[in-house]
Image (cartoon, rainbow, N blue to C red; front, side):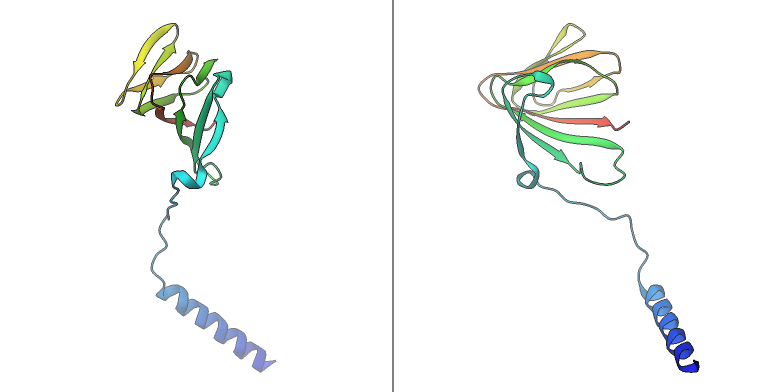
Length: 140
């Protein structure tokens, strides 16, 4: 019995020394790259055409928001739908037209649009090149 207590005590002391010697754990990070997560998908909300969606960190526990990139191929888009949370669209490249509450907005590189709860919007790719946007919204 004394041997078991001595072994257990040694393990506890050794484990404590290892914990004390370790640097303080930080929050950490996750890296994802386009090729790892790219998925061919139809235009969302019945928008038509073909897109490539990039849902970053969608399988990460505890995420409080959605962060996506979507490449809309010529003729594709997001169908008209009502918004239930704040959502941001930011154009990286290409051109398109977003309609928010019947108001058309030219979507060109560097344009950001915030759609608010209760608004309705749609997005259509225009031009010869893919329309590439970042999309972010809160998870409720």
